[in-house]
Length: 322
Ligand code: SF4
Image 1 (cartoon, rainbow, N blue to C red):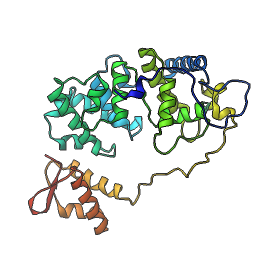
Image 2: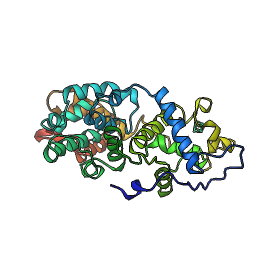
Image 3: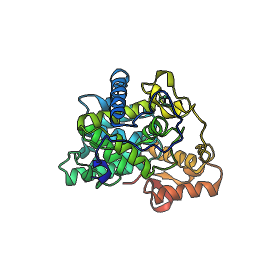
Image 4: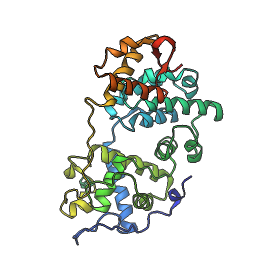
């Protein structure tokens, strides 16, 4: 378990932003303010949380784990149907583990970033081999699974088992950046300062901490959104440091916007879609017809092979990994 996750909480949080004097104290300036923040956000979550399959009482840890892999870079609306198909076909990790990695890639559909399918398959295999087919409860055991990083280990331990962990995804980081630090956007990559803030804000009680993790994530997803935060509907609006500072515009480096059309990602997506749609190997000539630029096409295909998503066979044919 990561040491910072055991930090005492909630004590005073050091806020380094330029938040002006305001009639209402910014959130989390004191332990009492942090406790009030917990109540506000958790009560809001109780009234507004979306009914998602992986949050239902009958959703097991495997459902939570699959959702966490899928949601990392894909919106909920696109994840929902694939998650349902996945759980129906592979209701337990062991069911997926006996399939080929290629079947996981095929079932991933158009969720994007398909290496996640390979990682989930590898994690399922390790769960079947090392943990008797049960998704482990302990953060350290989760973190030791292939393809599981700090975020996913914390999220699964928290959401599936109600454990006390800092769960810092993009949505949570944005909420803390605004409500606590007083800036519009968090840094490009998670910093130690963000982790300290999140650890200091983590409720001491395990069940409350797990609820807090889910609630802050939902607040970022539904209300404190990246481009148009709905401050009028926000439970912490009266104490939000960024709002109290007059909502100053982002002062950091320009934020990256991801393009897709014409990129190698688009070419890879087309090639992989053809392989997913075919029950058997696909000849090079079929792939060649999918993208006109031969250099970009070859680069994309080489990348798919290098990533283990496509397997070259003899005589210039390709298939999903066996
Ligand atoms: S008041 Fe607005 S900016 Fe502040 S946390 Fe709420 S939605 Fe985000």
